[in-house]
Amino acid sequence: MRFITRCCLILLTCGFILSCPGNTSNDSYPISLDTVIERPALSEIQPEELRLVLASAGEQTEITRNYTQDYFAIPYPNGDVPPATGACTDVVIRAFRKAGVDLQKEVHEDMVANFAAYPKKWGLTKTDTNIDHRRVPNLQTFLARKGKALSVTSDGGKYRPGDIVSWDLNGRGMTHIGLVSNLWNQETGRHLIVHNIGGGTKAEDRLFEWKITGHFRYF
Image 1 (spheres, rainbow, N blue to C red):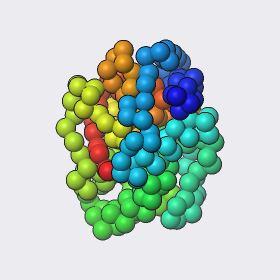
Image 2 (image 1 turned 90 degrees about the horizontal axis):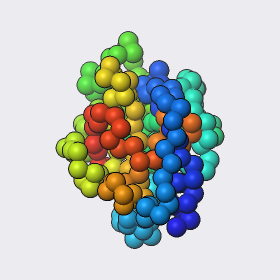
Image 3 (image 1 turned 90 degrees about the vertical axis):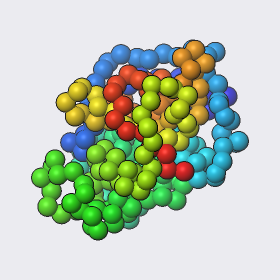
């Protein structure tokens, strides 16, 4: 219950030249704690890597209180922007790194070997370990290439804890990405999403608020 309380009391609303938007809304999304349960409990989730991903997502709601779309020069591998800030992609990157998957390294290595398979919307002619993994279209491409893509559906029950979901926010290619949490809203029949869309990392019931463009399951 501590995790539920922690996440649900921080409710509100990724922007990125890296690919997600700045703050798309000033609205808040209050959720009654009476309607939210852990489903399943974090301690019951297997495999361990998935449990670590979800634990990290919950921890980020207490640490990352800001949003930035700035370009950072970061170390490689295991590089990160300041933990108190980040964009939508950083939520996924940090969560997976806790489970031993460094998406900075994984995306970079796949892009080096298969550069033509990745989007060219930024006019790139070579890889950049500072930013490639922090762009939503690149993460979508990487996950699909690794066979992690699942069907997009309007059934909230098909999106499991730890799944990655991507969206088109405005119908013109403004992208966003987040993680499905193990917090289940009994009222709406779906899990909350852990994401950062402009006001820090939060857990919110916003799965179907935008057009879903990708559904991925890594573990």
